[in-house]
Length: 422
Image 1 (cartoon, rainbow, N blue to C red):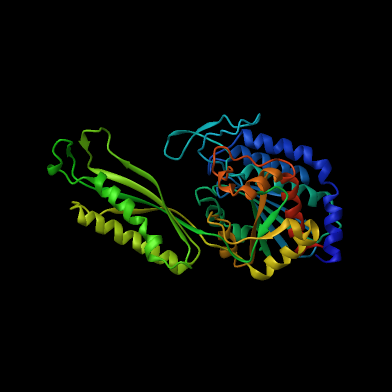
Image 2: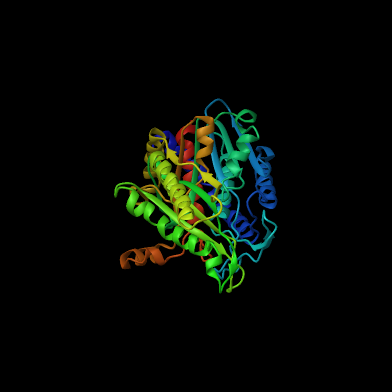
């Protein structure tokens, strides 16, 4: 971080302590009132009102529930900061005083519990804090700050929905796009790297067709339960036997559904699976292997119909721009100290954040902020039990508020100033 950037960050962040109580209140409110993907009307309204009070030009309803705020401060680059807003259909089990008790109706019309078990409430609070701090101190920076509160990250809909709603033409073209995510890690620490940072993800539904019969007369059936079981087992060999040890992929079967009664062989079975990859060639080979195995197992079972393979959603591979990543890493090390800034390999989690940089053809950088109490994390790491700590999408996932809240705000301010400091 150069002297100008360091001075600018000091001047802007001097107001963080006074703002933190309001940000904590906002965070707890969001946590207690989560909303499903593409239904984030209350969250969006809170974000929009926060920006209006800070003096931003605010546009709502971008990509259905997205919010875009612009703060123009003279000649200079435009920097886009992004936070996602949606929660998950998970019943919270944290025991927090501000835990969610919310239920809602999902896209299929089912009543489901809703919880912020991926930390997007923290992301909203981070961006709200950074936006307010930039508005309070205009003299240390020049340019335009573009803050984007995005819907529907959990369903891979929101970024593309905002792009389809003419995000590219309605708002200034940014010089860089920045985002961050709270993850398992010591609170107050930051981790990132250039190149691939989160995996590509493909979710598929496979419908296998059999011929139903009485459970006492299996000879009259083509049993889709056995077909599905054989398919699930064979799919486990895609990674273990078709990829080299140096190639990375994950194939997870999350849903296996068939039948209604123990003495009825059903007509069909449903498999839903998820694939994570870090390389376009590996992705192509894995998806082709899945299709080959599914069709072959159905044929081996004498299926009366070819299986139906339906894509459910897809996340892009997120690639951090090398030059922009280095600029941010230098700024983070100068601000936080090198001991708190870590290099990390690609995470198998997935994000639609990369859609923005791809669509706009500008550099983007995404990094992680630890949200686990430092002593807890250190003890688990020493004991080799990090895998036992609650992670994103766990019903027990709950980032510690302090200093996770302050660290995320600081990181957004420092990263943006790497372009905006005057």
